[in-house]
Image: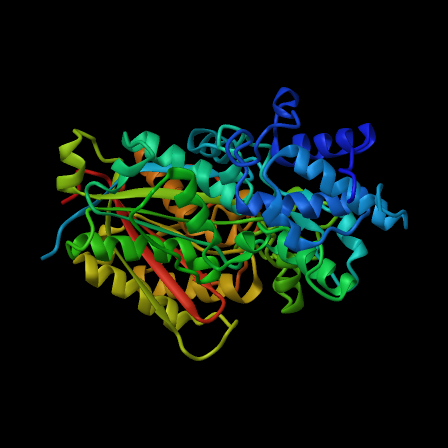
Length: 95
Length: 411
């Protein structure tokens, strides 16, 4: 059974930075448990753009169908971490 | 049913100031909004390196979810609309649609800057990868109208007239028709465009842009001048609030002016060549629809962009309709050509001219082209007591518009 991925501090900081720059969110709101819709006020258009920003800024490719599974900021960190690992050719932890 | 139509609010974002008072003061001072764009020399084939940009403005008060789909033209249109509403004593929100209100705002195209970045990335990537979800909302034909509606939380009727340089004058005339006919009680009308080198290129390609003054930006454009060599593209937004007497009186608001009438037509013959007969026809139609004689009009605000043919044809048409004694000027020598915004901006300035009792002269008019038909061109401000003025706008596609504007007490 795969182990849950722990996002690195670098990924967290990169995602938080683009959330601040792209969506004008204050740093204090950017906690892992923050829900994207209710707590951060993002909508479906923002979700699309968030993935574009992640891909462009982090130089990775994220599967679009994973958009629907994201509920919290922690989900975004994990998604970015997974995509980073896959882009760098490393296998997921626990596989 | 034919009801009078009044103007109760005006808003302006322009190359000479981001409100009506500043714009008018700069015009009175004879300032130029034109500056050199030497960086445009990198665009192969583009010979015009002049533009008239709007200075910095602040849209931070708008929510992010509203701003994210706005290009400059929608931002400027929203700010101008908010100015016009404030002057009319109106608030954004659902109440704006009571009584029945139409929002009629347009632009020449969607955002040219966004179109360029969108297609540049599309071609580079070989597909839509990496495109933001909001890009399309900046390039729709009705981007300005839709974005302003979102900015105002307006839930009434919205329409987006588009006829390039006659867009906002068409919107105003449409508003006049609908208010006069009793279809709407209030119409928020105007237009906006943003400066981009591709806009200058459109005119440069057909030899209508100024190319001989790249190192003397304040000396071009030169409407009606013997040395004129074409137009200079500008940007901005002009918006007015049009109202029926009933709508206005219900709030106890005093009118700024009366929109007596207007007319728009197409010459149906040529996409770009100006046509004095069509110009005269639209001016006469505006007079006829307003029940006004040419002698009732004391000033013509010409479209006159500074092109060789356009200025010549318009002068001939004005002389034919009004005779040789009519004062005529163009504010494009100061502002440049703000395309979809110019009709409303020029109407606003014309209204202020009547209110202030002064006619703004044509900037850069040093020597009147001797081949032009004789009217009263002037390069120094004139006092006026005129009760009524006519404002022209013409556009690619053979589009012609004329607006008749009067002091508020004119019956």
